[in-house]
Amino acid sequence: MIRLMLAGALLFASLEVAAAQTTLRVGDQKGNAQAVMEAAGVLKDVPYKIEWKEFPAAAPLLEALSAGAIETGLVGDAPFTFAAASGAPVKAIAAIRQTREGLAILVPETSPIKSFADLRGKKIATGRGSIGHQLILAALEKNGWAASDVQIAFLAPSDAKIAYTQGSVDAWSTWEPYVSQEEVLFRSRRIITSEGLTPGLSFQVARPEAIRDKRAELTDFIRRLTAARAWSLNNIDSYAATWGRLMNIPTAVPQNWLSRAKIRIAPIDDGVIADEQSTIDLYFRWGLIKQKLDAAGIVDRSFTDAIAKAGL
Image (tube, rainbow, N blue to C red; front, side, top):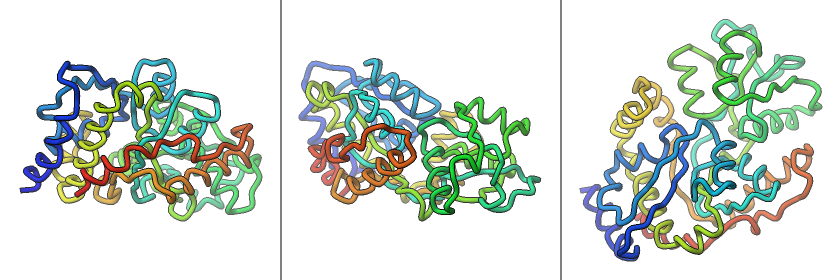
């Protein structure tokens, strides 16, 4: 019944896409969007071609978008802010809301570190401008610490994993599915999450020319993704199985991640803009960006109806 409802909600969207088949180049992180859309069955009868491109983190995805190699993709609010401040041609067209338990600072099972307070003077791995970096800054600010009170090692996820495993760093500030991989497969411990510290916001972003020239395709894609996310809230097992197969990772990992994440698509509304402004302000206070952006200027609210209709 749920699948029939999704199909009905998406049928009219497909009819809006031009008859001549076009290609929408979509950036994904660790099979995130592709897996949920496949599991929900919303990729059937897409009237255009989706060309998926996989990325390990938001930074390389945003670099590809800036270079024109992709037209849309999923990124966290922090790297989006970093990219927008650097002048990248990018707009947020939909928001992704979820719980904040999956953005965390991890330590190995045997580490003597028990809380953030124990990290003073210690080395933490994360990506520059990432949501992991955002979490560290927010935690420093909450505790009244200076940037020099911890050592941040800026590393891509693959390099951070090696450094963390080898003990070259004391902790790793990272996001899903890396957090669940470490918890489930290696018994790492979360000593702090972003609950109460950061908005826990991600965005579906797009190049301005794609918004202009491929609006029908983007609108249809957003509708399908919104419907898939709504389906996934009550079908975690199916989603986890599909994601595990695509990523060749034990299903227990996505089960751990998805059972607590409660991921859903939300329109770009006043609340989203206020949360994005808080991220901009945080990065500006810490000198990561040199200009204080206006959040309303880097988002596109014109996909609100598409999200509302698909989220029925």
